[in-house]
Length: 390
Image 1 (spheres, rainbow, N blue to C red):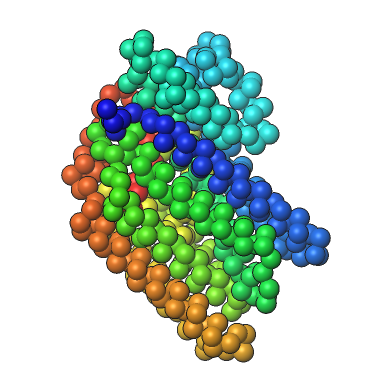
Image 2: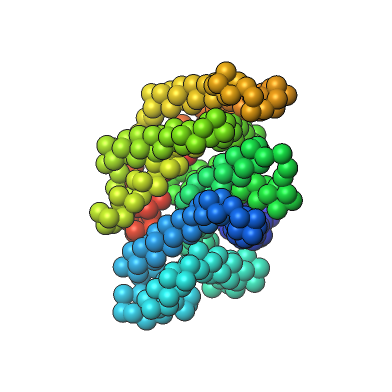
């Protein structure tokens, strides 16, 4: 009998390993690049490469620990310790959690416990014998969703800006090393993986939302996101090549995105300070792509966002051609400009197709409107109040 959508399958377990491989590969290739730049005397490139790696690592550790701490209050077994400071099946005490996150391996502990518990459930079937199959699969999906949300933070704090930096370095010089190619490839695929993984995990972790269908819907959604993000990063790259002051454009966008998120009065975190950090992180994400921040109708917001997106993508290659034609050959401008234009058009077409034909409107509307479904744990509220795929 084929597995139901309610089960955490062997394929999902294997794909979790693939996601871990991409995560580790992305970080280590970036660290390798930082070492390479340092040896070559490029201090600024070394610093920026490390800043993106450490920034993404720091933010994910902060939120990972905060979520563990919140979940302790809910006495969630097999995920964290209980309110009496005794370790659960995961073996994590409060002190161990603090040490793990101080050393930057909190997200790896989540991978470890998800893979360990997933192996027990989907490969040994021990829980099915005791009649706890549905409960254990639900816990696995909650663990996977928390991990996917942290990966989404890491993606836009580390992988996306790292891809922008490496493209700027590569396009600004004549050669490109193998390590630079690997770094950009890992960053690109890490972005793609985190987007699809988060969308699918979020759909499944909320009981009143159907799982994201496979096949055409996933492909169209992935094309929409990757084409718009890649073309936007290339446009930012051209602005940086035009002048270092081109960094003002994404900085202004970050400020606008953060301010807009603040005006929406998000309530994702349990503390005021974390909420401010969360809104700043969402501002970074909105610099590269659009997400539904508050779970409301965002048709107008999307139109405004992608109108400005199209303006930047048209203006960047035109400004470089008009103001600095001596920087690169006509072939370079034509190639990069064509990629930006083609990616923008394809991405926007996929966006329209997805929301007109493939987006599950009724289920998503229910997700935004219905409260109090099931036990209102911190984990459930976290998923409900986080970014809606958009």
